[in-house]
Image (cartoon, rainbow, N blue to C red):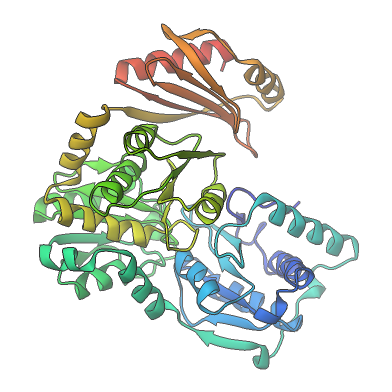
Length: 469
């Protein structure tokens, strides 16, 4: 059963992610594009640095061409945000991106990007899944592969146009004047050459790590988490750099190492970006965050008379808020971020440029800037814990979670209960906890934000006892 998750369909290469299944899924995407009268605009096909990504992209291009759909096929590996930008740049009817993002190297995946250049909403992926089922029932499978022809194909490289667009979104003059020292680590992924090229063109002193293709990602995960950025941390500290910027496999998420080697979490980074945009750029407007993301942005928004748009988990919902609600910025605790005026797709390259802009504009490290924000709005700490349960226990726990509505938790009154995605309890002092189930595994994710590490633990333990996790 081929199912699209929060950000596309992914599977283990040769086990699930096969040329036959890629052909089947692409045929269903062709059905979707045709049904929505978008085939005349063509489809962008991009791919990352993973094993066989270029060959899978060739298969996708062939199937689409076999359906009479023009293909804008990437000449080389591209980041996901660049492929999303290409949808707008070429006025295409959508894009197919071959990537498994930050997953282990044995995985690959297909991400469909609709004509609005952001992640596909659930109703779109459900329709594509229905087309997959119809094709399977009709006997379409390995024999359905089509080669297309060159008349339906144009080789493209939107990187230069994307770079020009990105420079319009950031304060290039401020970065140029600051002459900062930055270390960039694309983790062997599709983001190679982007941040170092852009920053170098603005006069920054840039060095790079892991800036060549390795489908095995150096034996690690292409995930810019604190644990995976130890080499970047050491390089920043030893070289006296102002910043270290790490990208995931398809460069749609960013990891930030500050000058002293501190890791700036995505929650902290989103709050800093919003603070910077409203205080230094003078932007006005709401901020979009998922239900699992820090409320520090709420405090900044409230102080500036702005609204907060709270969405379910998944950047597709953030993208929708950016499109429809004119948000200044939107982000999530897992690292996705985009900006007003940009495509509604998470973009680690844009985030990296904003990190450098903030250090240049404020004349201080991100850690010092975070301290300034905390002094003004409160110092918060947040974490996520994943709890695995027995498969047969998941329905029981889901029912308990549905009924979870205590009057008090960890010594505080519960003032708000949110059920937009899982169950979230907001306490009187502003601390909160969210428990939500994984859609595919017997795993429950517990997100907590509090005023101290001790309160964080108290809230986690209290909610675990109530749900019996």
